[in-house]
Image (tube, rainbow, N blue to C red; front, top):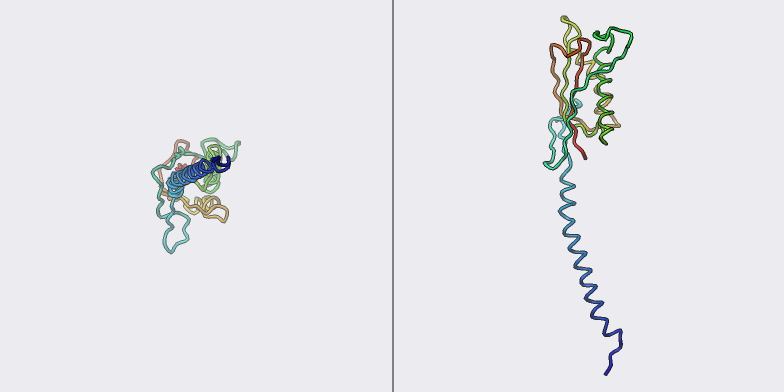
Length: 182
């Protein structure tokens, strides 16, 4: 007795379907750790409890994340007609802070990052004169234009140091940051 061709091919088709289902299941299982790893690769930012101060209390960075360290950045000249070794050439602390953060923002953008990727910041402030302390309020006016805004809510950890001076006597601000590539 001769079986129809369809019946002879049926077992082969069933075997192919089983192999396809096994292959799909294997792919799904193999992809599961990748999905978990990608989800686990998130940076976790811990806010300061009961505070609206615009820095993070702590940040957790996964071991497999790419860290990007940006060297200390100083202000660009705000007044080219002023003595290049004077505060007048670079502006007050707020002006210098904005200048520095704009430059850092540009550097990060050139690397495919943004200010929202910054996780750590170290700030060096110089007192504008021997009689006056560092201008922390002026620094904060510049800083809060970039961090803790509606457009950019990611806050870095941060330290601010008063230093005796920077390389150029006109510089009041130098900032270095660390970012994490998402």
